[in-house]
Length: 123
Image (cartoon, rainbow, N blue to C red):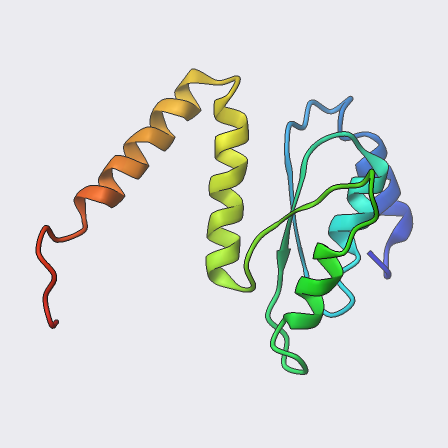
């Protein structure tokens, strides 16, 4: 966001006209990318805080969470789990309008549930 602001503005400003339906923005440190993207487009933005060395991503999480009213960012957890859930959230948004995505998401969830043992084990 900070190193290429003109590209950021252009990407956000053209998101709707390009047909984008959801944007996933991963960011670390000051983590302004998701919020700045949300300020430039009405396309839903999902923010994923990247884990950093300095504060383990907590600074990124707070930056993405604390958006002013009117510019929402759906904020996921820090790190890999957050990135995976960000992708699943994006799929769920797309599934509202796309029956193929909806079917694939339902299959994925069913497979995930089926992979869990019926009985707990110590392994």
